[in-house]
Length: 60
Image (tube, rainbow, N blue to C red; front, side, top):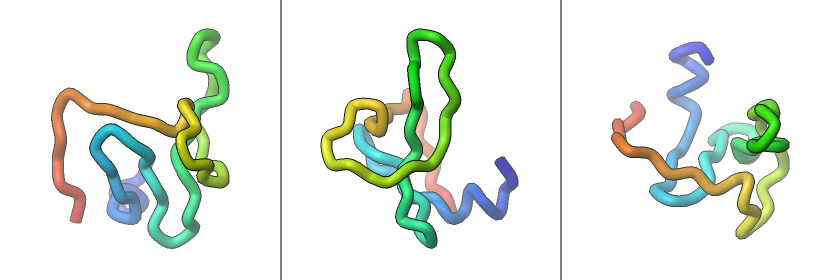
């Protein structure tokens, strides 16, 4: 992902990563079989849209 694209993300600790302009959430299709990570329509509480990280960095 390009640096300018990374600046358009909002990261919520222990929750969804949402694209600011498009309003879509980072989602994984099937984590058990190496599924693709894509942006899809946000769905509250959807497990495949919940993310946690070991290290946090503030994106500007």
